[in-house]
Length: 232
Image 1: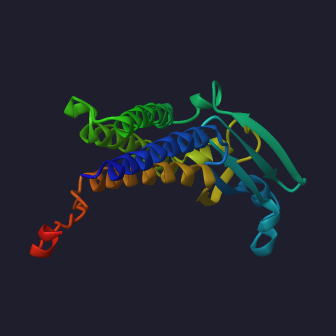
Image 2: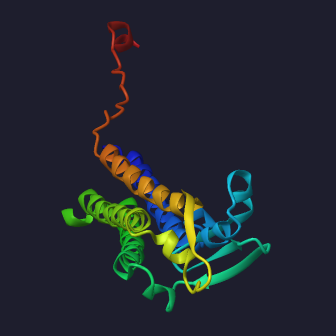
């Protein structure tokens, strides 16, 4: 295989691994994994609100893995509040799934860094051990991508099957009861998905780097000697 093609392939793999690492850090730090609309059920029932009147009792909530905010609309105007997951809110949530999401994404970040190191090593030289070569790069990418996929699945399971948004919306609420009327994943969630796509693309790049390319050979013209050349 031509050396330039191998170096270019693993150079691209290095960029993808670095990109996946940065995306995972951004997803962990950003506070907007999910945005939802919450209805103040207690307030709506007190005034027997129906139809368009319900809009005055619908607030907003958005949160990430560490913090979030919500706007309460209970007939007295919007009231915004901030909250943090650690340590108090964690007791109200499904702590197992939340911690699993967090730890899996941290693990995926570390594995993406290892993948970056292996890709840089393969860009600079051909490793003596097969484990340090393309197979090693693929292995770390598979492990990192699997950790990201499991982290995303854990978060979606907490939202869909354990009423994560509703539990957060009703945290420390004694007088009012909130129900979720709309949920949608926000940019932090999709950034996390993008990191998984980058890791999957890395596998394709490394696989293509092993495709043998035809070597370009320069044709050397042989000099022909005639009888006239000998006479001269």
